[in-house]
Amino acid sequence: MPRKIAARRSQIHGNGVFAVAPIKKGERLVEYKGQRRTHEEVDNGDTGDVDSGHTFLFTLNDEYVIDANHGGNTARWINHSCDPNCEAVLDEHDGGDPRKDRVFIEATRAIKPGEELTYDYGITLDEPHTARLKKIWACHCGSKNCTGTMLKPKK
Image (cartoon, rainbow, N blue to C red):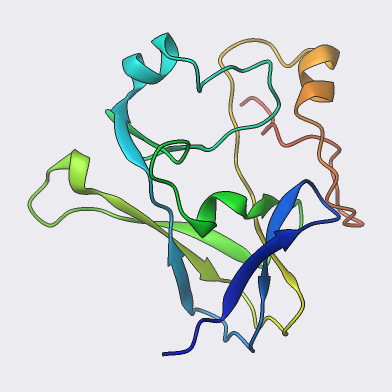
């Protein structure tokens, strides 16, 4: 099967992932890969800094995070957008082993060659969303629906 996506420089942020062939709505494009780490390991490590405004961490479930800083693939370069054309879909392990859960990126609409793939990161932080944190986690997607931040409103 021919590859339908490729990573390259993005106008949104740093690197991005782009369609190189037509993509159909609902098409599964890539698995988000990386090392499985516990939330505690991430919190105590050097890859989970909330003040960086940059992350390759993907919360998998209540126990594990996928850390694409270690063993990550092309999926780690997919940028956030407030008007995304993809979504992250959790595939829970049939045997109930949370370490074996997986995340796939799927198209939510048809995507033309040359379009950048994006999804809503859905970042939630325990600490208050101060102006400083909103600036650190600023969104540059350029969508007319852009909220200006990758942070999700607190409920």
